[in-house]
Each structure stands twice: as C-alpha cells, then as structure tokens.
Length: 578
Image 1: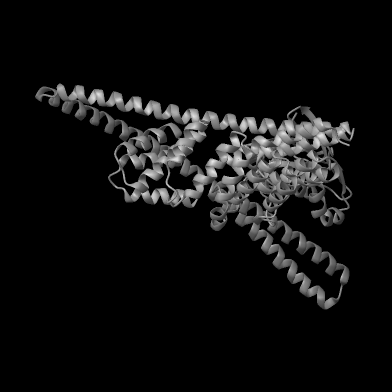
Image 2: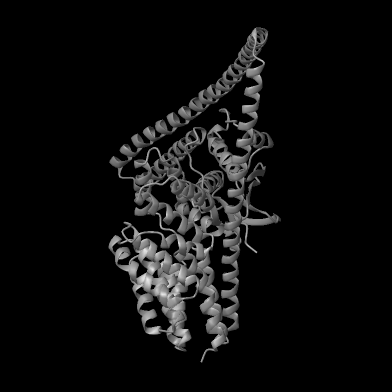
C-alpha cells in the first residue's frame, strides 16, 4: 500500500493549477457583448475605458473608471456591467469580501447573471466553503453548458469535482472528473491531462493505488502533446513519487530531473514575459516623458514668437535645407558610383559564367551528338562491346552536363537569395552513407574503393540540403579526378571542441598550388586552359564555398600533382544540453 504522506504530496501538487484555471477569464462571447455595449454608449467615456482596461486585465484602472461611471448615475444595465467589472477585478486582487459585496449589487435580471453565480462559487471556493461553492457552480451550469464552450465547461467540471474531493464525496467527484476528461476525446488538451491527474489523486486518497498509477501514467503520456509547462512538471513529478513508492529510485530520479527541467523552462518563460512587460511599461513611460517635454517646449516657443524669431528660423531652415540637400546629393552620387562598380563586377562575372558554361554545354552536347552518331553506326555492325562503351560514354557526358546545370541552378538561386537555409542537428555518418549510395554506380564503374570512417557519434549543426549539395559536388570531383582502382576516403578529426573537421581524401591526379589558389579565390571561375577539360570551370567549388560559409564552416584544400587531394571541411558541432 502506498503511504498516505505520498498521496497528499501528489494531491496538493496539482491543486494550485486548478485554482488558477478557475481564476482565468475566458475571452469569448461576453467580451463581444461588453464591446458592443461600449460602442452603443458613445458619450460614456468612463464606461469605454472601464471595459477597455477590463479586457486588458488591468484591474486597478478597471476599478477607477467603473466607479466613475457609477457616480454618473447610468441606466440599470450599465450599472450591472460596472458592478460585474468591479466584482471580477476585486476577486483578481484577492479582495474576496469586497468582491462579494459588488456581486451582491447585481440584479438577477442581468443577462449574464450566471457568470455572477460562477464567480461567487469561486469566492466560496477560495474561502474553503466548498458546499456553498458547489451550490453556485451548479446554478451556473445550465447556462455555461448552453454556450458549448468546451474550455469553459471543462473548468466548471474541474472546480465542482475539486469541491466534492475536498468534501470526500469521491464517487461524485470522480463522475465530474470523468465528464471533463471525455469533453473532447479526439484532441489532447491541458483539460484532459488535468482531469486524469485529478482522477489519479482521487484514487490515491482512497488507497486504490493501481487505478491511481494508471491515470498518472496516462496523464504523463498525454502531457507530451501539450505546451503547458506547469502540467508537464506536475505529471513528471507525480511519476517520480509513484516510482519512489515502488522503490524504483533510478526511474524516480529521471522523472524528478524531467520535472525540474520543465520547472526551469516555466521560470525562464515567466522571466521573459516579465522582462517584456517591464520593457513595454518603460517605453510607454519614456514616451509620456517625451510628450511632456515637447508640450513644455511648444509653450515656450509660443511665448517667444515674433518677427525676428521667424526670420531667424526661416534663414536657419534655408541654410539647413541647403546643407542637407547638398549632403544628400553627395551621398546619392557615392551610392550610385558604388552600385555601378558592383553592377560592373556582377556583369563581368555573369559574362564569364555564361561564356564558360555555354562552352562546356556546347562541348557536352557536341560530344553527345558525335557519340550518338557512332552509336547509330555501331548498331548496324552489332558490335555489342563497342555499343556498351558508347552507352557508358553517353551516360558520363549526360551526367556531367546535368551536374553543371544543377550547380548553375543552385548558384543562381544562391545569388538571388532564393535558397532557404534551415539549420538543424545532423548525424554526419548517415549523410555520408546516403551520398555513397547515390554515387555507387560511378564508384563501381571506375573500380574505386570508398571508405566511410566518419565517427558515428558526431552531430553537426547545418542546413541539410546545402550540406548534401556540398558533399555531392566534392565526391563527384573526387571520382572524376581519380584513376581506375583508386581510393576515396571520408573521415573526421577533432581539433576544436566546438567544430568537427570532415576530410574527403582521394589518391587521384591532384592539382597545382596555383590552381588551389584560383579555386579558393572569392568569386573566381577558372578560365579555359590547356587542361580545362580535366579541371573544369570551378563553378561547383564556388557554389560549395558559399554554402559552407552560409553554414558557418570553412574549407581548406591540400593537394599535390599525382599525389591526390584532401578537402578539409570544418562545421560547427551541435551544442548538447548539460
């Protein structure tokens, strides 16, 4: 049997959240009604201000303006609204006796009198007069049910159930908690989680431990799907106590740690809201000070106004305007010059890019045309070995042209800022495996050995799509510049605790130091040289560099002619909590 001290620990852990839910004012049809009422009373400024501050939940201001409106002898319905504003505001300020007085001044003919009953029930609840609280809650029940507001109905059922729980009328309390739980069975809400915790507490008080544990576990599971940090904390803490009573201290410790994490999240959220509220109030205060200063200055200027003053001001304005216009002219001239230089650079890059890309595409298409002519001639001779070689050659040409166009597309999108970057935690080993799978046919065609020695424990913080583009380009280059029966390796090394170095190494033809400098130079495309058919345009690598930089990474190239190449990529690791 679970010890009773634990039972009470679980029960009173959750009660404050139920009290809080009872205090929440539901913003729905009643808000619309008071706004319509305020619009109909065009001359009643105090009532408009009272309802405005009521909706803004600024209770002191609500009390001030509702009293001002009452002092002006309004009609009966307006009085009812004002007394309701005051009663609700006093309840919020925990002045329960005064709230009783204000609610008592409202006539039962008031259209929304059921809200008065519901609030009076809440007042008796706070005074721990649970029997009277139930009477008033039940008075409000019919009207609340008629509006079919599931959140409002759920709060009512919770409050009635809690009252019966305090009175130890467990069967009735259980029926109300279960009514609450099945209000919206297709959707997990905070009301459902609260109901399950209430039911569990009810069973614990009756020493029905297995039934209680079942509902605690159910509440904990469902709490994963809601955003209420307090309920998440309660659910995890309850499970910790359950496991402690089972003497399963390891699980209990895990649940307690989770509960503390949710508590910290709630505290951080409250701090953020508090800071935001303080900043808002500070900004308003500063603005009001500025307005007051401006008013004083305006009065001073009005007293000093004369002909000489206006003449001096006019002259000053002319001089200031002239200086300002001259400064703007100089500034615009500089801006236009900078834009012209930038445009010239972009045009030069565009011309170079189109020249090189069109040459490569023309070469690829011409090669494909020539190869297709050979293929047609070979079909007549039925030389299948030569046919096979020509088909492989055509596929290689097509793949090269496709890669060029794909890089050109991504480069253009990057330059026009159309690429969307979303950084997330990526398991590096798995991505390298995917890239290897995509290039398996090309690796087999050249009998190249591929080795994936990337650490399986490394997670990096990058954009997934751009990382794949970078790795595909670099692996494609490694295959292109490797000899038959070569070897390509992917492996990692850690020289910085915050970054991971990914090395792509091949034993292919390599490149000269001058070529490396040209490739690493910003925005540089390789002009056609004697070995251009081997080296290429460098567009793919320029695209890789920009995407690596976008992911806060770096690129280093180490290579020697006929001794292979190392591409060293450095990316930030995923930060771990704790």
